[in-house]
Picture 1 (tube, helix red, strand yellow):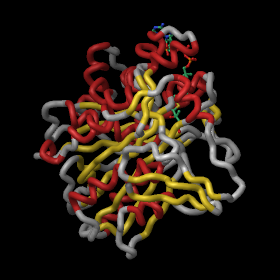
Picture 2: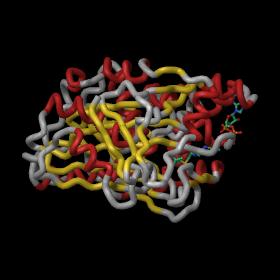
Picture 3: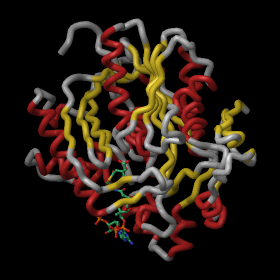
Picture 4: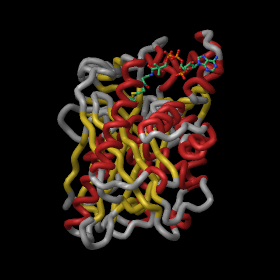
Length: 391
Ligand code: HMG
């Protein structure tokens, strides 16, 4: 371990969309048994963006409370992780930088590797803080997940953003070394530039994820990481919450331990409550799992938490974080619950209309209807430029 303070997550806040589609409405439309959704994949509802919401408005909404609490002076880097890019050249983070009034003396960049890139951002941020402990890095992970109507992936859609402030004396979680790493070129899930909905080989993606768990864990141990028994809980990337249970069962198999149902439920269950009603938020999903864990479990002070980040394609990382003393005073439990509870339910027709809508690409002036109740909105696409405003 390097000497000096251990950087980590000083604050964490998430935001989600204006609308929500309960899985009961999807099942009523497509004839699926509700047990397949509620039990089989472990999902109850999915966040659906309004027409004036996107990764920028969600990312800014997640980050605004963090900046209100801590100010902007020490932030010299903004790392925006997403796979729902709105532009091939300009970082979504630059729009957020403007909406939030961050200092001009800052570097802002967007990172991509499917659902994994928020973890890359977190690790890069801790390295920057090691180099200069006076600085803080704002990490934003924001995604809107979209699959074709009627496809097996449709029930796993979702959308959310997480903002994390990374600092040298973190109030929430210290990020430890080492990390276990794994990369394998696999076509399990991808989205060509000309498509707005992802393509996926669902069964292959589940196998690829489990193989990545094994690979990242094996490297973690070879690098001198903690033994399995030391961990108080495990946060997994959750494309659907049942996947966290499958992943943990697989990890227990890998280390030669009997997979006890209650043990698995105890280790991952508390991390799934937000994801079960938000759906797959890609880069944000793992850290929504952390938010759920911290917001619900009575006292995790000093406990190591295992993190498994997976991004299709594929890259995975296993690492540990230790929960800081006094962390409970810094949580945003009320705001997080409010974010999921305030969403307006859609019926199937309303959801379908939002799913099928897209901006014309003619360069004209295309204002969006005012739908979001969030603090920021995408007001128009005008001259091929996205126009954002504060509500
Ligand atoms: P499917 O093929 O329609 O579902 O879609 P299924 O038939 O496999 O059923 C799912 C589970 O429900 C099964 O359980 C059924 O037995 C059960 P399992 O065998 O898995 O234990 N089931 C029921 N349970 C109770 N009552 C019932 C009932 N009926 C069935 N009545 C699939 C499943 C995951 C393939 C689909 O949702 C999909 O394609 N999803 C998108 C891909 C995905 O999420 N992959 C996960 C790993 S890849 C990843 O995590 C990366 C990703 O986030 C992208 C990124 O990195 O950017 C996706």
